[in-house]
Length: 157
Length: 110
Picture (cartoon, helix red, strand yellow):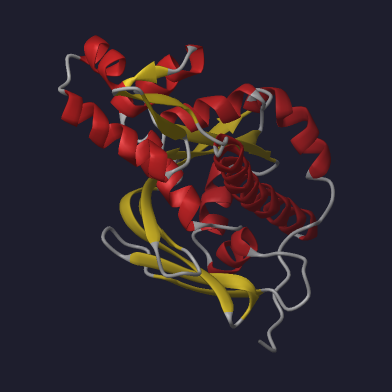
């Protein structure tokens, strides 16, 4: 039984540009950013096989979540595979594997993120029944992408 | 995102295929431990262990009826679990969307 959760986004840029932005500090900051005032993102990345990308993020110094990604596969500009440990506020954690793919798609890049090893297949399936097919959401996502709602990080924090 | 120990127990309880099958059976009608054991070829003790895990997550409640222990579905926790998945999904899709918008905005400036 597959235990995957899949997310997609069509991005108006070439795969090389998207891949490079995703492995760049500013792009990684954007990925974990929020518009909320005071939102914290502390990101450190060692981009090599076996290297770790560690991100602490949250609304305040007392409420920080941690994601620690270890690079398993780096294939520029098409694929990244990470083993990810998500740590909750109570210190407990769970592991998933995340694969990112970057496919040329009509002059743009279809970026796909697949989480494997999600807690239970049953819940995922139950959840997906209520969610439209990811590809059917692309039109809406393209429209949303016109809005420059990218990461905001307050350097004072 | 909000996490609770109850949700942890729910996820743990649902992580086992036998326990999920027990819930399916109980969704049809209440059943005794003995009735639940038969379809799986499990011992009574084996089923009791599974039922105890489901009870701890409030997915199942049991009641002594005569000499048997009857099991039925407990107060629903599945909605909490489904909500957790939805929050989780929204958080990751939000990251992807935000990153995409960042790249496109950067392109526009370049």
